[in-house]
Each structure stands twice: as structure tokens, then as C-alpha cells.
Image (tube, rainbow, N blue to C red; front, side):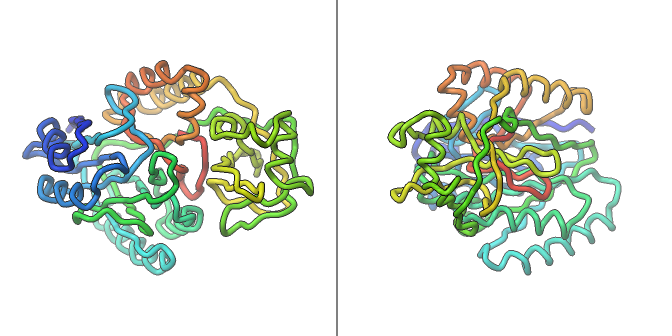
Length: 364
């Protein structure tokens, strides 16, 4: 049985009208699941109630920094997909508050193991949507991956268009919540696969983190200097020239076990420290990331994906907002938008991505 997808979007700022326009394009008696992403500018209380009233099947989503689908990149409004056929099942688990996630994850893991034992022949993966300002992603995804076991996990941290004030997730009960995450178990009779792509490798310029607050993801010092000064000097810039576009093109890269893990810089603070979107700690040696060709790396990733799974019905993508900023600055955003649409990628721009048991940055 084939998997069927119906995509819809609305640019209306009125919640009721936006949901009505979305539903007109994707609604149907055969819907098994709905996945959506939306602008943080909506009246989220009204939007949540409208979504609950309109869709009776399992429905999940979150606020974003823009989203993408069959028509490429979309900056505002709401974008959704209805999935049916292929024995699709979606079971969302709400995790809130995030400070007590360990106990909640233990219950989720027990339930998922029981589900797999009772129906072992379905293909499954987990999708994590999490408050992008919670700074809880590392612990949450590691705990999920460890406890659930043998389950591919992808995910993204909800965004708010780079305001860094409030981000929200939606689990289907009419509420958009902060200090929360939705872990969605997808099951299908059709095969699934997970993949990750990035276009940064370790560069030649090394920096030693000599002062940090890991819990807050803040780097206070590098090479014994205020972090922003050391970072700017390594780039040959002044502190005044540090902008989100500079951060997007020159992330910090940590090498562990042969893997290059990007640690993106979110912003510079008044005390010249740097806030990151991933965990960072004192004593680590990082490099300024060396950029590869983004279009070439994603084209290669899609080619490999299609060798593994020819003609996928749907590719769900969690793509870092700093990647999009870089695409815009280098004027390849339209090419990237068209390439993503050509490969049927549906998803959103995030404040960080989760892949199996790791929280990462500047990846798809």
C-alpha cells in the first residue's frame, strides 16, 4: 500500500482563516496524520483551537523560522501535510515540564517497547519537536535514544524568527506549549530511513574554550580572551562586525571520534561572551568551520538517500535557520529552495536539530 501525501499552505494571518485554507487543501476522510509548521506571529491560542476543531487525526507541529515544501521556502503563515496509506500510524507523546523529562521518557520508552513487541513488523522512527529556547535538547534526545533503543530519531528545535523570546510545540490537544516537547512515534508498513547532511568541516584555526557556562551554553573566554574578541580576531574582523550572518558562515566545529559536530553561535552578549545553540564546555578545542559547497553536499546527500530508498513518498526535513541565513547571504537560497522542493522535502527551519541521540547545529 502506497503512502499518500497532500500538502497545503496559507499566508493568512487570521488563525481561523489560515486553518480553513490549509484544511481545504489537505483534509480528507483517509487522513492518518497531520504534520504542520507555522509562524510564531499567529495568535497561537486561537490557532491551536482551530487546529483541534478541524483535524481529528493525530496532529503535531511547532513554531518555526520559516518552513519549506513543494513550493520551496515559505517565510510566514502555516504549512502542513496530511499523510495516509502505507499503514501510517502517528502516536504523539507530550513531555512537559522539561525539567522532569527523565521520568516521562521512562514511561514513553516502556510504552514504545510494548507497541513494538505487539506489532514487530512495522517500520518505525521517532520525531522530536522541542521548545527551542529550553536548552534541554541534549539531555532529552540522549535520554530518549538510550531508553527507547534501536529507533532512528530526527528532530528540530522550534523557532520564533530569530527573536529568541518564545517558541512553542503542539501535540494535538489544542494547546501550543513552551517548556515542552512532542516526541512522535511514526509507524508504517513501508520502509523508512534517516539521514543527516552538513557542509562544514573542521578548519585550520583552533580556539581553546577557557571559560564557559555549559548549562547556559555560553562561552565566556577563548584563548584567555573575551570570547567575542578571540572569535573576531581569528576572523580578522572587529567585534562590531559580528552579526548573525557572520556566525552562520563561521560556526565553531568540535571534532569527536572522527565526527565533526557544529556548535553554532546564536548571538554576542554585552559582556562579549557568545551564546551558542548547542552544549559547549571549558577545555574543549574547537576550530572555525571550513565551509564546503552547500549545493554540492546536499545534492550528494539526496543521491545517497535515493540509492538507499528510491522515490521516497516524503522527506521530512529539519534544517537550521543559520543555514538559510548563509544561503541568503551567498545568494543561493533560490537554488536551494528549488532543490529541496524537487526532492519532496517538507519541514522547517530550526534552532537546532536532533539526530539519533545527539543535538546538533547547521545540519539538515
